Image 1 (cartoon, rainbow, N blue to C red):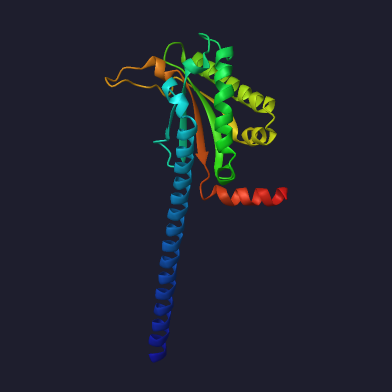
Image 2 (cartoon, rainbow, N blue to C red; image 1 turned 90 degrees about the vertical axis):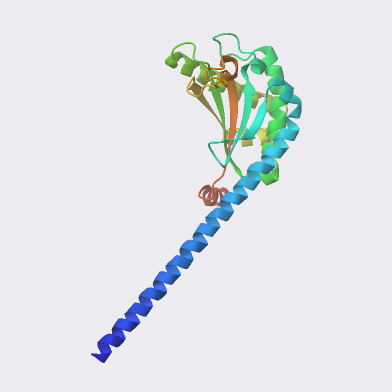
Amino acid sequence: MLNREKDKGMSSSFTDLMTSLAVIFILLFCASLNNAQQEGQITRNSVLAEMQKALKDFVSGGIEVKSDPKDPLGLLILVPEDLLAFKFDHADISPSGESFLKVFIPKLSRIVCLPQFSNEIHSIVVEGHTDSSGTARHNWDLSQKRSMSVVRTSLNILEKNGVREEKTTFLHLLSASGRGSADLIMGPSGEENSSSSRRVVFKLRFRSIEQKPLLVAFQSEKE
């Protein structure tokens, strides 16, 4: 009887010990995740400050640089359609739109390729947006073609500028996405703001804690 009680006591103590260790491990893991998320947000805020400073001359033209309200690791650069000067129902970038990109893209790429930021940015998605006029299918197709035009022109500009390293970085990061009229800009009274809805958005996404080990592994394989 005494041996049984002794065994039960030891078993209970061992269980309590394992439970305590598990709780400590979970707390440490949560703290690590929280620290990593804070570091990611600090990096995003640093890039945000650099972008706002570098692109301040474009603010009067309607460009807006801000944190993504839907993503704590996201950064948005909103470019009004007027600056790219797409012709009605066309996806080709006009000469004036290309002139804008020739100034805008080098400023963007310089910050993205800074050593302290380049490994922290996971992707740059160029999103095309339309207003609600036209069918959903047509709007999606048009916005996809426009976003692709922006990506191609951006890479060509970097190639012509002779900054191959920046072009290579952008080539790995850039992708195009057509959103059509799925994300309209609404006015204060709830009505659609058609001119604001027609836009191109550069959406920067920073690496999460789960993606960083993958980056280290990928770089090790390249070496």
